[in-house]
Amino acid sequence: KFGISAMACAAMGNIVSDVIGQASGGTVSNLLRPILPKPTVSPQQLKTRSARIATLLGGVIGIFLGCSLGSFPLLFYDEKKGDD
Image (cartoon, rainbow, N blue to C red):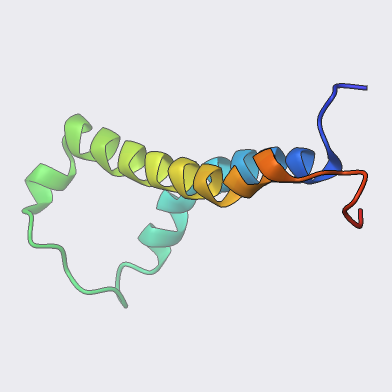
């Protein structure tokens, strides 16, 4: 219907899922704070808006690029020959 394979749909769903997971990952980090090693930046620096944005964007961009690169072989996928 949309002109893309089931594998491409799965890859796009994976990207959306991973980005949402990364965006909500701060909750898990806060719960694990007593277990994780302390960061080398000061608590005042961690509270800044720019530090929170940098952390979020770094994770989201990393997840997006990783999923996109992992999906790259789909450009060469022939649905007629593949097992779906």
